[in-house]
Length: 314
Ligand SMILES: NC(=O)c1ccc[n+]([C@@H]2O[C@H](COP(=O)([O-])OP(=O)(O)OC[C@H]3O[C@@H](n4cnc5c(N)ncnc54)[C@H](O)[C@@H]3O)[C@@H](O)[C@H]2O)c1
Image 1 (spheres, rainbow, N blue to C red):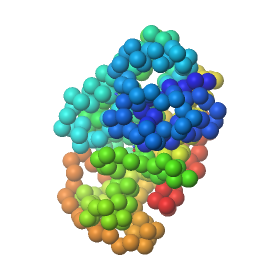
Image 2 (image 1 turned 180 degrees about the vertical axis):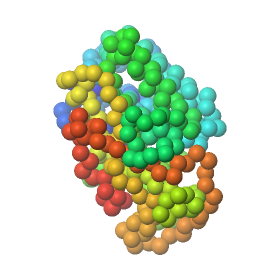
Image 3 (image 1 turned 45 degrees about the vertical axis):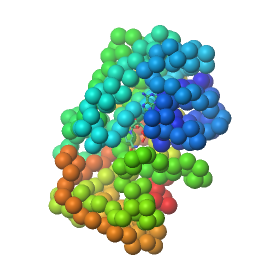
Image 4 (image 1 turned 120 degrees about the vertical axis):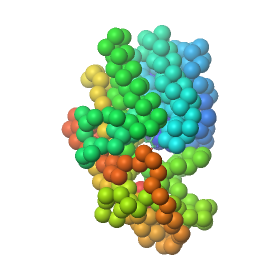
């Protein structure tokens, strides 16, 4: 099977490329390198530098490599930036994904795995979060991903597309052999920021809000190891290739850790007592985001194997 991975030079994409290659798929990575790194792409994969909005190039790559299915990571994904530059997000997430789907139609490829996000739920009042709970995103980034989920459902209905939309919670961790890991610029994710602080590359780590309705007053999040995410993509691919039909799944570890707990674990594991600064809440940060991943466990047999917090930090 020949798989096109858009955004495969990025964090989650490069880990999924590794997983797919290890499972015997042929992989073509298609990435414009706006955020990704060629060095993160496994050498067994074909790498093409290109933008998913470039219809002709993408069409040639899909036809020349007889692609069977697409795994679509390419997107911009910074919540703060999305609020300041919504046009960039509607363009690179919504319009670019529409361009990708139209190119796939032209090439008669109709199977796609899509990177969605817990941000589609906004500020849920209950947890663990189930897939059928209301989706009311509180930021532009989450809204763009929800629009794309709607587009996928419409393409499925009208053009026979089959898709699996994976709503990730907080991706974290690195490949066990240490060859690839998380390297965003700028970095906005908690665990790499904490580790950079421990390494002395940052002065301090900020806690945004200590007055949430949680045990220690800081926000609670669900951290899922990137290797477990990669395995879920493989299972999702097997599902659309062998069984068919479209599905939406949460992907989280189903365990919640507060920001303070993550910092304390990192201090204990690294043995370094770095500086922590408590500042007021940020707008739009829900108190608790913890997934139920029961649906993907039950339907695809997915089981997280690496997602305990110590394993992620180490
Ligand atoms: N990291 C997380 O915790 C998280 C959580 C939920 C959802 N997601 C989603 O997962 C996906 C991957 O996230 P990530 O953390 O690996 O991000 P990333 O920025 O590391 O990877 C995205 C990749 O897409 C490429 N890209 C962007 N726009 C492109 C375009 N128009 N054409 C071709 N390539 C393009 C970038 O160069 C980059 O390599 C994104 O869609 C993101 O929204 C991530």
